[in-house]
Amino acid sequence: MFTFNELRWSTRNFRSEILFSVGGFGCVFKEWVKENGTAPMKLGLGLTVAAKTLNHVGL
Picture 1 (tube, rainbow, N blue to C red):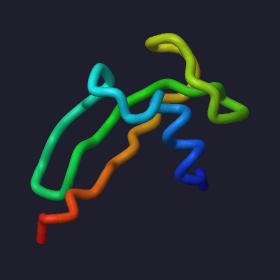
Picture 2: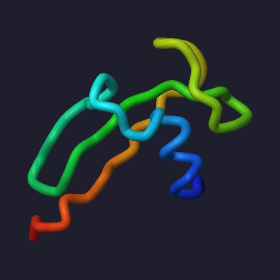
Picture 3: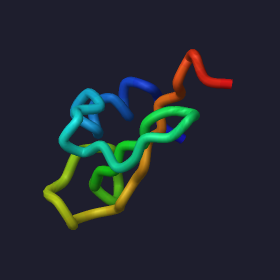
């Protein structure tokens, strides 16, 4: 499990450059993090993670 602050840090504050997809429930961000932590890694290195932010006006 990750805290919100860890997700925000690992996705570099949910920056638009790593936006993976957008749907009715919200946005999905794709990023790579260190295997034993939450530190962001370079593209293609470490573990791939997806973080979803929910759309507050969606059903």
